[in-house]
Image 1 (cartoon, rainbow, N blue to C red):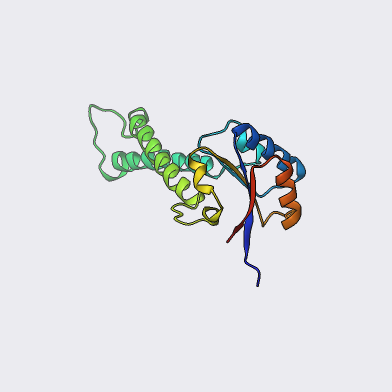
Image 2: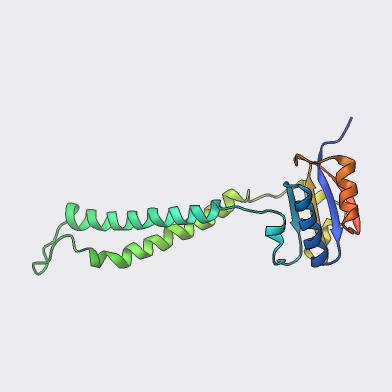
Length: 177
């Protein structure tokens, strides 16, 4: 009986090696991969083809909802629910609504960023198959890893292994589910 495979992972010693391998994998046509490093590597997200605009759009839409909610709340209170004529001023004096509208925009956007980041990143995630990879604990210390997932359309157990070995990886191993 075959054990389900999450992917094949390659270990590199430097960030430059990882970046070079990620670019080569992308050029070879691999699309389902992830990279792990102990610090941010400039250009790595682009090299693996990471494009995710869900969180920024969530923040923007949450901010718009906050602006509408803050403005509507003030309008309802000042014009409909409890109108007060102070010094002959109009009930709908929109310039006075700007500070509260701005603050509710920021508040809703901050909540949208926090909740969106957790939801779209799948957090909290106490377990991931990549934790089973040999020597993966060094990803937070001094090693760099590139994993090509088994769900990739070009994934072939032996072909992908040979490809990762050809990128100069120090160690290439399979990651079980």
